Image (cartoon, rainbow over all chains, first blue to last red; front, side, top):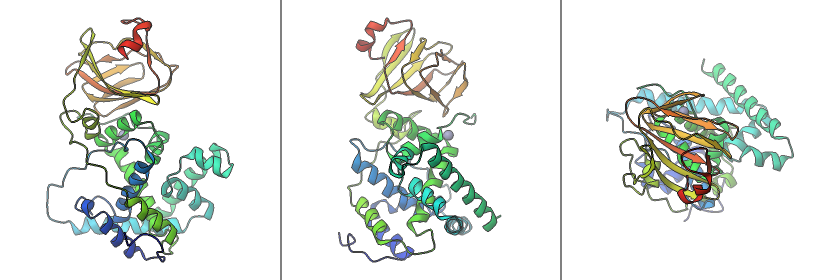
Length: 146
Length: 210
Ligand SMILES: [Zn+2]
Protein backbone atom coordinates (compact mmCIF):
# COMPACT_ATOMS: atom_id res chain seq x y z
CA UNK A 1 0.00 0.00 0.00
CA UNK A 2 1.25 3.44 -0.93
CA UNK A 3 0.40 4.94 2.39
CA UNK A 4 2.94 2.91 4.27
CA UNK A 5 6.41 4.12 5.10
CA UNK A 6 8.21 7.40 4.67
CA UNK A 7 5.25 9.52 5.64
CA UNK A 8 5.81 13.12 6.49
CA UNK A 9 4.11 14.47 9.56
CA UNK A 10 0.57 15.11 8.52
CA UNK A 11 -2.35 17.22 9.47
CA UNK A 12 -5.30 15.78 11.30
CA UNK A 13 -7.41 16.00 8.16
CA UNK A 14 -4.84 14.03 6.12
CA UNK A 15 -4.79 11.27 8.69
CA UNK A 16 -8.55 10.99 8.87
CA UNK A 17 -8.80 10.84 5.07
CA UNK A 18 -6.02 8.25 4.74
CA UNK A 19 -7.55 6.03 7.35
CA UNK A 20 -11.05 6.34 5.95
CA UNK A 21 -9.55 5.07 2.67
CA UNK A 22 -7.76 2.20 4.41
CA UNK A 23 -10.93 1.08 6.16
CA UNK A 24 -13.38 2.13 3.44
CA UNK A 25 -15.28 -1.14 3.73
CA UNK A 26 -16.04 -0.27 7.35
CA UNK A 27 -16.58 3.42 6.75
CA UNK A 28 -20.29 2.84 6.17
CA UNK A 29 -20.58 1.87 9.82
CA UNK A 30 -19.18 5.15 11.03
CA UNK A 31 -21.92 7.15 12.69
CA UNK A 32 -20.93 10.76 13.37
CA UNK A 33 -23.79 11.02 15.90
CA UNK A 34 -22.17 8.47 18.12
CA UNK A 35 -18.42 8.84 17.76
CA UNK A 36 -15.83 11.33 16.66
CA UNK A 37 -13.88 10.16 13.63
CA UNK A 38 -10.49 10.07 15.36
CA UNK A 39 -11.77 7.94 18.24
CA UNK A 40 -13.54 5.58 15.87
CA UNK A 41 -10.42 5.19 13.77
CA UNK A 42 -8.27 4.72 16.82
CA UNK A 43 -10.59 1.92 17.99
CA UNK A 44 -10.29 0.10 14.66
CA UNK A 45 -6.50 0.43 14.66
CA UNK A 46 -6.33 -0.80 18.27
CA UNK A 47 -8.38 -3.90 17.45
CA UNK A 48 -6.30 -4.71 14.37
CA UNK A 49 -3.07 -4.34 16.31
CA UNK A 50 -4.35 -6.68 19.01
CA UNK A 51 -5.60 -9.26 16.50
CA UNK A 52 -2.20 -9.40 14.81
CA UNK A 53 -0.64 -10.40 18.11
CA UNK A 54 -3.28 -12.88 19.24
CA UNK A 55 -4.12 -16.43 18.30
CA UNK A 56 -7.84 -15.64 18.32
CA UNK A 57 -9.38 -12.31 17.36
CA UNK A 58 -10.54 -10.17 20.25
CA UNK A 59 -14.24 -10.71 21.03
CA UNK A 60 -16.19 -7.63 19.94
CA UNK A 61 -19.29 -5.97 21.37
CA UNK A 62 -22.42 -5.89 19.19
CA UNK A 63 -22.60 -3.23 16.51
CA UNK A 64 -24.77 -0.43 17.81
CA UNK A 65 -28.30 -0.44 16.39
CA UNK A 66 -29.02 2.01 13.58
CA UNK A 67 -30.60 5.24 14.67
CA UNK A 68 -34.35 5.37 14.07
CA UNK A 69 -34.22 8.62 12.18
CA UNK A 70 -32.25 8.65 8.94
CA UNK A 71 -32.03 12.43 9.02
CA UNK A 72 -28.60 13.62 10.15
CA UNK A 73 -28.84 15.68 13.30
CA UNK A 74 -26.34 18.49 12.70
CA UNK A 75 -26.50 19.74 16.28
CA UNK A 76 -25.55 16.39 17.68
CA UNK A 77 -22.74 15.88 15.17
CA UNK A 78 -21.31 19.32 15.86
CA UNK A 79 -21.60 18.82 19.62
CA UNK A 80 -19.60 15.60 19.36
CA UNK A 81 -16.92 17.20 17.19
CA UNK A 82 -16.70 20.03 19.67
CA UNK A 83 -16.33 17.57 22.52
CA UNK A 84 -13.42 15.92 20.72
CA UNK A 85 -11.79 19.31 20.14
CA UNK A 86 -12.21 20.24 23.79
CA UNK A 87 -10.64 16.95 24.78
CA UNK A 88 -7.57 17.68 22.65
CA UNK A 89 -7.34 21.20 24.14
CA UNK A 90 -7.63 19.84 27.66
CA UNK A 91 -4.89 17.27 26.97
CA UNK A 92 -2.61 20.03 25.71
CA UNK A 93 -2.93 21.78 29.08
CA UNK A 94 -1.71 18.86 31.20
CA UNK A 95 1.75 18.50 32.69
CA UNK A 96 4.11 16.42 30.49
CA UNK A 97 4.28 13.45 32.89
CA UNK A 98 0.50 13.26 33.01
CA UNK A 99 0.32 13.40 29.23
CA UNK A 100 2.90 10.61 29.02
CA UNK A 101 0.97 8.46 31.51
CA UNK A 102 -2.26 8.94 29.54
CA UNK A 103 -0.48 8.37 26.24
CA UNK A 104 0.89 5.02 27.43
CA UNK A 105 -2.46 3.94 28.83
CA UNK A 106 -4.85 5.27 26.16
CA UNK A 107 -2.84 5.58 22.97
CA UNK A 108 -0.23 2.85 23.19
CA UNK A 109 -2.69 0.71 25.19
CA UNK A 110 0.14 -0.80 27.14
CA UNK A 111 -1.03 -2.79 30.17
CA UNK A 112 -0.17 -1.01 33.41
CA UNK A 113 2.09 -3.88 34.43
CA UNK A 114 4.17 -3.44 31.24
CA UNK A 115 4.45 0.32 31.79
CA UNK A 116 5.70 -0.52 35.25
CA UNK A 117 8.32 -2.92 33.85
CA UNK A 118 9.45 -0.46 31.21
CA UNK A 119 9.78 2.51 33.52
CA UNK A 120 10.87 0.66 36.66
CA UNK A 121 8.17 2.52 38.60
CA UNK A 122 5.94 0.58 40.98
CA UNK A 123 2.51 -0.42 39.63
CA UNK A 124 0.79 1.75 42.26
CA UNK A 125 2.69 4.82 41.01
CA UNK A 126 1.70 4.12 37.40
CA UNK A 127 -1.94 3.72 38.35
CA UNK A 128 -2.02 6.88 40.43
CA UNK A 129 -0.34 8.86 37.59
CA UNK A 130 -2.96 7.69 35.14
CA UNK A 131 -5.74 8.42 37.63
CA UNK A 132 -4.31 11.86 38.35
CA UNK A 133 -3.94 12.52 34.63
CA UNK A 134 -7.60 11.61 34.09
CA UNK A 135 -8.71 13.82 36.97
CA UNK A 136 -6.72 16.76 35.61
CA UNK A 137 -8.17 16.09 32.18
CA UNK A 138 -11.70 16.16 33.61
CA UNK A 139 -10.87 19.37 35.46
CA UNK A 140 -9.49 21.08 32.32
CA UNK A 141 -12.49 19.91 30.31
CA UNK A 142 -14.82 21.54 32.83
CA UNK A 143 -12.92 24.81 32.47
CA UNK A 144 -13.15 24.67 28.66
CA UNK A 145 -16.77 23.55 28.51
CA UNK A 146 -18.46 24.07 31.87
CA UNK B 1 -35.96 -3.58 32.38
CA UNK B 2 -33.84 -3.31 35.49
CA UNK B 3 -30.84 -1.02 35.31
CA UNK B 4 -27.48 -2.79 35.27
CA UNK B 5 -25.82 -2.47 38.66
CA UNK B 6 -22.77 -4.71 38.46
CA UNK B 7 -20.11 -3.68 35.97
CA UNK B 8 -16.73 -4.70 34.56
CA UNK B 9 -13.94 -3.58 36.93
CA UNK B 10 -11.54 -0.92 35.55
CA UNK B 11 -8.51 -3.22 35.50
CA UNK B 12 -10.39 -5.81 33.50
CA UNK B 13 -11.64 -3.28 30.94
CA UNK B 14 -8.07 -1.97 30.57
CA UNK B 15 -6.77 -5.51 30.00
CA UNK B 16 -9.54 -6.15 27.45
CA UNK B 17 -8.62 -2.95 25.60
CA UNK B 18 -4.94 -3.87 25.62
CA UNK B 19 -5.75 -7.36 24.31
CA UNK B 20 -4.14 -9.11 27.27
CA UNK B 21 -7.27 -10.64 28.81
CA UNK B 22 -7.64 -14.42 28.28
CA UNK B 23 -10.13 -15.20 25.50
CA UNK B 24 -12.84 -16.61 27.84
CA UNK B 25 -12.90 -13.37 29.85
CA UNK B 26 -12.73 -11.22 26.73
CA UNK B 27 -15.97 -12.80 25.47
CA UNK B 28 -17.73 -11.97 28.76
CA UNK B 29 -16.46 -8.36 28.61
CA UNK B 30 -17.59 -7.98 24.98
CA UNK B 31 -21.01 -9.44 25.88
CA UNK B 32 -21.36 -7.02 28.82
CA UNK B 33 -20.36 -4.07 26.59
CA UNK B 34 -23.15 -5.14 24.24
CA UNK B 35 -25.73 -4.83 27.04
CA UNK B 36 -24.39 -1.99 29.19
CA UNK B 37 -24.48 1.62 27.96
CA UNK B 38 -22.39 2.78 30.88
CA UNK B 39 -19.41 0.50 30.22
CA UNK B 40 -19.79 0.99 26.47
CA UNK B 41 -19.43 4.72 27.09
CA UNK B 42 -16.30 4.15 29.22
CA UNK B 43 -14.87 1.99 26.45
CA UNK B 44 -15.62 4.51 23.71
CA UNK B 45 -14.46 7.47 25.79
CA UNK B 46 -11.11 5.71 26.14
CA UNK B 47 -10.94 5.37 22.34
CA UNK B 48 -11.76 9.06 22.11
CA UNK B 49 -8.70 9.86 24.22
CA UNK B 50 -6.67 7.58 21.93
CA UNK B 51 -8.13 9.49 18.98
CA UNK B 52 -7.08 12.81 20.52
CA UNK B 53 -3.48 11.54 20.71
CA UNK B 54 -3.79 10.33 17.14
CA UNK B 55 -4.55 13.84 16.00
CA UNK B 56 -1.69 15.22 18.05
CA UNK B 57 -2.98 16.17 21.44
CA UNK B 58 -0.26 18.70 22.10
CA UNK B 59 -1.64 20.87 19.37
CA UNK B 60 1.10 19.69 17.01
CA UNK B 61 0.61 17.48 14.00
CA UNK B 62 0.67 13.73 14.34
CA UNK B 63 4.17 12.32 14.39
CA UNK B 64 4.98 10.31 11.29
CA UNK B 65 6.11 7.26 13.26
CA UNK B 66 2.81 7.04 15.16
CA UNK B 67 0.96 7.44 11.90
CA UNK B 68 3.09 4.77 10.19
CA UNK B 69 2.49 2.37 13.01
CA UNK B 70 -1.23 2.90 12.83
CA UNK B 71 -1.41 2.57 9.08
CA UNK B 72 0.60 -0.64 9.30
CA UNK B 73 -1.90 -2.12 11.71
CA UNK B 74 -4.76 -1.17 9.41
CA UNK B 75 -3.18 -3.22 6.63
CA UNK B 76 -3.85 -6.41 8.53
CA UNK B 77 -6.81 -8.24 7.00
CA UNK B 78 -10.13 -7.32 8.58
CA UNK B 79 -11.54 -10.16 10.69
CA UNK B 80 -14.71 -11.67 9.28
CA UNK B 81 -17.74 -10.18 10.96
CA UNK B 82 -19.15 -12.34 13.80
CA UNK B 83 -22.74 -13.65 13.65
CA UNK B 84 -25.47 -11.29 14.77
CA UNK B 85 -26.93 -11.27 18.27
CA UNK B 86 -29.81 -13.71 18.67
CA UNK B 87 -32.32 -14.03 21.52
CA UNK B 88 -30.50 -13.47 24.82
CA UNK B 89 -27.09 -14.05 23.21
CA UNK B 90 -24.95 -11.07 22.11
CA UNK B 91 -22.89 -11.44 18.97
CA UNK B 92 -19.70 -12.39 20.87
CA UNK B 93 -21.58 -15.36 22.42
CA UNK B 94 -23.17 -16.36 19.10
CA UNK B 95 -19.66 -16.39 17.68
CA UNK B 96 -18.56 -18.90 20.35
CA UNK B 97 -21.71 -20.94 19.64
CA UNK B 98 -20.73 -21.09 15.96
CA UNK B 99 -23.88 -19.14 15.04
CA UNK B 100 -26.16 -21.94 16.29
CA UNK B 101 -28.46 -22.20 19.34
CA UNK B 102 -26.89 -23.80 22.45
CA UNK B 103 -26.46 -27.55 22.56
CA UNK B 104 -27.06 -28.21 26.24
CA UNK B 105 -25.67 -31.04 28.30
CA UNK B 106 -27.77 -32.06 31.32
CA UNK B 107 -26.01 -31.79 34.66
CA UNK B 108 -28.86 -33.07 36.86
CA UNK B 109 -31.50 -31.13 38.79
CA UNK B 110 -32.63 -29.45 35.57
CA UNK B 111 -29.33 -27.61 35.32
CA UNK B 112 -27.75 -27.54 31.88
CA UNK B 113 -24.40 -26.46 30.57
CA UNK B 114 -22.51 -25.98 27.38
CA UNK B 115 -18.77 -25.53 27.41
CA UNK B 116 -17.88 -22.98 24.75
CA UNK B 117 -14.14 -22.97 24.97
CA UNK B 118 -11.49 -24.29 27.29
CA UNK B 119 -7.73 -23.94 27.21
CA UNK B 120 -4.85 -23.40 29.59
CA UNK B 121 -5.79 -19.76 30.10
CA UNK B 122 -9.37 -20.40 31.11
CA UNK B 123 -12.72 -21.83 30.19
CA UNK B 124 -16.02 -20.37 29.12
CA UNK B 125 -19.41 -21.96 29.58
CA UNK B 126 -23.11 -21.23 29.32
CA UNK B 127 -25.22 -22.33 32.28
CA UNK B 128 -28.98 -22.81 32.35
CA UNK B 129 -30.56 -22.85 35.82
CA UNK B 130 -34.33 -23.40 36.30
CA UNK B 131 -36.13 -20.84 38.50
CA UNK B 132 -35.46 -21.32 42.21
CA UNK B 133 -32.71 -23.88 41.63
CA UNK B 134 -29.30 -23.50 43.20
CA UNK B 135 -26.10 -23.86 41.26
CA UNK B 136 -24.15 -26.56 43.09
CA UNK B 137 -21.96 -25.03 45.75
CA UNK B 138 -18.49 -24.44 44.46
CA UNK B 139 -15.32 -22.75 45.50
CA UNK B 140 -13.01 -21.29 42.91
CA UNK B 141 -9.41 -21.83 42.37
CA UNK B 142 -8.79 -18.54 40.64
CA UNK B 143 -11.12 -15.93 39.26
CA UNK B 144 -14.62 -16.30 37.85
CA UNK B 145 -16.56 -13.75 35.83
CA UNK B 146 -20.28 -14.43 35.37
CA UNK B 147 -22.68 -12.45 33.19
CA UNK B 148 -26.46 -12.91 33.38
CA UNK B 149 -28.02 -13.18 29.90
CA UNK B 150 -31.55 -14.13 30.93
CA UNK B 151 -33.51 -14.31 34.20
CA UNK B 152 -31.59 -13.62 37.41
CA UNK B 153 -29.69 -15.18 40.27
CA UNK B 154 -28.78 -14.07 43.75
CA UNK B 155 -26.11 -15.03 46.23
CA UNK B 156 -24.39 -13.51 49.26
CA UNK B 157 -23.12 -10.65 47.04
CA UNK B 158 -26.64 -9.58 45.97
CA UNK B 159 -29.07 -9.99 43.08
CA UNK B 160 -27.87 -10.16 39.47
CA UNK B 161 -30.10 -9.51 36.46
CA UNK B 162 -29.60 -9.45 32.70
CA UNK B 163 -26.41 -7.53 31.95
CA UNK B 164 -25.00 -7.72 35.50
CA UNK B 165 -21.57 -9.27 35.98
CA UNK B 166 -20.24 -10.88 39.14
CA UNK B 167 -16.52 -11.12 39.77
CA UNK B 168 -15.71 -13.90 42.23
CA UNK B 169 -12.30 -14.79 43.65
CA UNK B 170 -11.00 -18.02 45.07
CA UNK B 171 -11.76 -17.17 48.68
CA UNK B 172 -15.51 -16.87 48.04
CA UNK B 173 -17.66 -19.94 48.52
CA UNK B 174 -20.94 -18.90 47.04
CA UNK B 175 -24.16 -20.58 46.14
CA UNK B 176 -26.09 -18.69 43.49
CA UNK B 177 -29.85 -19.40 43.36
CA UNK B 178 -31.84 -18.62 40.21
CA UNK B 179 -34.65 -16.08 40.68
CA UNK B 180 -38.33 -16.75 39.93
CA UNK B 181 -39.77 -16.38 36.43
CA UNK B 182 -37.59 -17.18 33.46
CA UNK B 183 -34.82 -19.76 33.72
CA UNK B 184 -31.48 -18.11 34.42
CA UNK B 185 -28.94 -18.29 31.61
CA UNK B 186 -25.42 -17.11 32.44
CA UNK B 187 -22.11 -16.90 30.70
CA UNK B 188 -19.23 -17.78 33.02
CA UNK B 189 -15.49 -17.51 32.47
CA UNK B 190 -13.04 -19.12 34.87
CA UNK B 191 -9.27 -19.15 34.82
CA UNK B 192 -9.15 -22.55 36.55
CA UNK B 193 -11.48 -25.55 36.78
CA UNK B 194 -14.30 -25.22 39.32
CA UNK B 195 -14.21 -27.34 42.45
CA UNK B 196 -17.73 -28.56 43.01
CA UNK B 197 -18.60 -29.56 46.56
CA UNK B 198 -21.72 -31.54 45.88
CA UNK B 199 -23.59 -33.15 43.00
CA UNK B 200 -20.52 -34.59 41.33
CA UNK B 201 -17.49 -35.90 43.17
CA UNK B 202 -14.32 -34.02 42.42
CA UNK B 203 -12.73 -37.06 40.83
CA UNK B 204 -15.21 -36.86 38.00
CA UNK B 205 -14.58 -33.20 37.38
CA UNK B 206 -12.11 -33.66 34.52
CA UNK B 207 -14.55 -36.00 32.80
CA UNK B 208 -17.56 -33.74 33.09
CA UNK B 209 -15.38 -30.68 32.59
CA UNK B 210 -17.33 -28.51 34.99
ZN1 LIG C 1 -21.40 -2.04 32.74
